[in-house]
Amino acid sequence: MLKLTKKVEYALISLVHLSEQDDNVFFPASKIAEKYAIPNEILAKILQQLSSLNMIKSIKGPKGGYKISCKISSINMFEFIELIEGPIGIVDCVASNDCNAIDCCSIKDPMTKINNQIIETLKGITIDQLR
Image 1 (cartoon, one colour):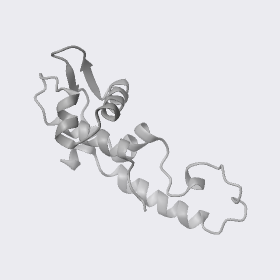
Image 2 (cartoon, rainbow, N blue to C red):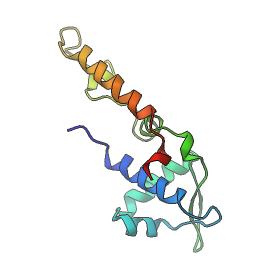
Image 3 (cartoon, rainbow, N blue to C red):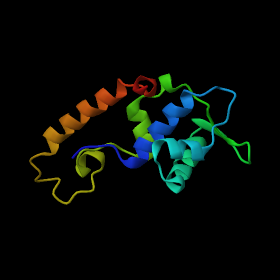
């Protein structure tokens, strides 16, 4: 089955949620976790990664939280997934050349074509279109 990882899914949920909040308000991670039933520990790591990518800002402390710091209309799904998880490949040989059967593989070329079509589709969808 071809699907996004939970990490990408939770990151998208968080980013879209924060983009819908007042620009002057820092939203607590616990509220995001509670609203979307995301485990706190996993969400904390994802929010740290989004912060290190300068997609969100964070403030620590009792009145702390997170707020959006980027224009989600300028980030396409392909870029986002690669930033969060790394190269996109429906089979391993499409994302890397680390395959023992690469010289005799009969599906590499068709899989590469399919993968490229998926990438082009993802490039045409921006995060703000997920609202």
